[in-house]
Image 1: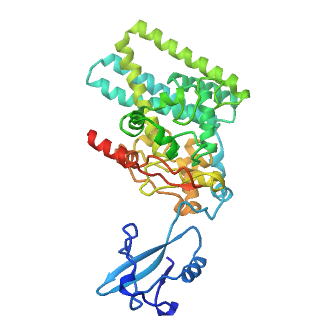
Image 2 (image 1 turned 120 degrees about the vertical axis):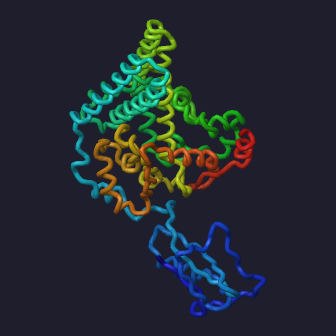
Image 3 (image 1 turned 90 degrees about the horizontal axis):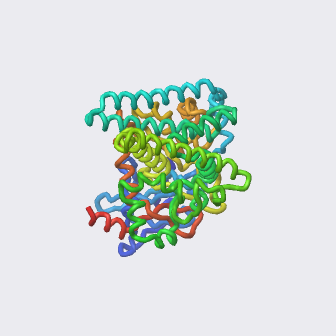
Length: 438
């Protein structure tokens, strides 16, 4: 730790008592630091700060710490990691640290996960229908909704090309998996590609990006509540598919949408047709089996799947104990944007949803198959250093994540309209109104 004790050796003189600095609440004296009194009450000079900064390797920022001992005041500067500064490594260094076999895609192994998940889905449905008890149905809903989410993740891998090197295989499997859970494969694949290519960019990111203050202030109160008050944000995905996020226009079903370029329109039409075919199949099954049975078998698990998707995708970019930067302009780079993503531990669910919680390496290198992500992350961590934030360990079920979700929704509301490095800010009026409504 780089530190500087201000004393007479710095050529500094104490200020009068009336001008003595006071520590700010956000800069408390850390109990693990050792402080040495330089006698009297020193003042900080710009020259000392400049010399100190030259001797500290980036990324770091100086933090002034004050501690009182009796009559004297002790001053120190310590080095603090700043996630908003450019990292001292590049993508090439991270890539070189990842074993070569982690980049190999095995289509047979990928297909084995598809067979496993589809078998579980049909097995759960058959079991629930056979028992047909209101004691069993809630368990079925939770399990089947989680399996729908697992199917989505495999289709997501098809969209990235990490499923296999065969584009036709990726497209066929992706369409089957995503259409079965009412997701337009190509429409979502393309918008998700935009998300990865612009992750961490205030305006250009596509998924759970922050709202600039001017857009946030134009939202009506009901829209603000729906976006930030549970459980509504956890039901946002179908709305996003039809109308995107506030401040953006277009639809994942419309080939003329701003999301797509002309060469992608045929793909979008194909996926929309598959979605319509699945919706028609569900309507036919509802007519044959009755609305209640389809509600039990499909509608409720679909709702659970949507909650899983919104929970996971939101917490991969929000909810860290410290504020993380968002970028604009020249400050944004692919690497800096990707390093603001977060890994999460989901306990028993990690294997079920194909280790999607190992998200940092996935965001930087989405072509790595999901079954190599854990190993690739372990290999890259020494290079990433403090830019990798170790996830909190989960119990069997990731119940601890609901605290992070609730906390983030209460304080991560908008970012400044200006500045190339910005952080989420809190709307006190929204917070107070949410508290009164409880």
